[in-house]
Amino acid sequence: MQPRIPRQFAAGHDRNRAEPDARLTDELTAVIAGARRRALRDGDRQIDTAHLLHTLLESDSEVRAVFGGGPQVARLLGYLVQRSIGYGLRWQSGVEDSGAVPVLVGVAGWSPLAAEVLEDACGRAGRRGAGRACGVDLLAAIVAAPASRAVEVLGRAGVDREHLSERMRIGERGGNGAGGRGAGGGVTR
Image 1 (cartoon, rainbow, N blue to C red):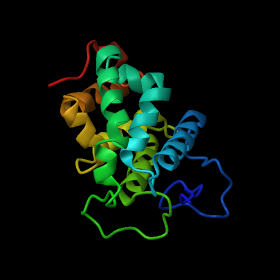
Image 2: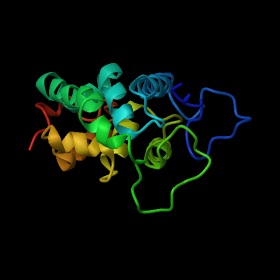
Image 3: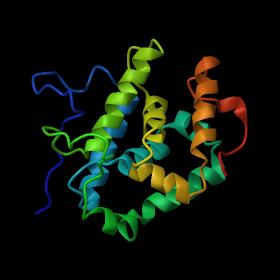
Image 4: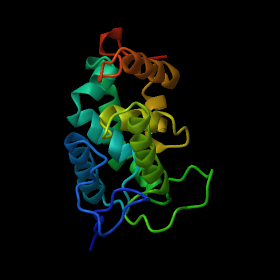
């Protein structure tokens, strides 16, 4: 029997707190639910950053816009789909952890790094004055975690993390929630 992924969101999750997490937009809550289903379907014990990235790309048009849409997104999704035959087999044997801090406890169903990334996304939303984190906040947090599985996939797909981060910063300064939707073109090396 495959393990169930608990309905916990992140390291600061309080069991008495009503779900969905009030710090997340409804769209991001749906992304997390999708990542949970993907992890369960893939036979993974934990939601990791690659599950989050995969679900973001499939369901969030603002995140796709950061990549310029089209071929870049298709290439990324192609790499992410391969997790069941390639990356996933290697990843199932270990826990996704940045190694920067001791492994977090009490975050059942989440890789330590995925839990950190979600907390970072909420912090990013707060710093930009938003009440709740959105998909682009989560993408920015994922891109800022160099040891993550999602960043490994981005690299293999030829995505330049620095350029991607810059596109999101331009979007924030311009008030564009799409993280630079009008910046044009894909984000490649």
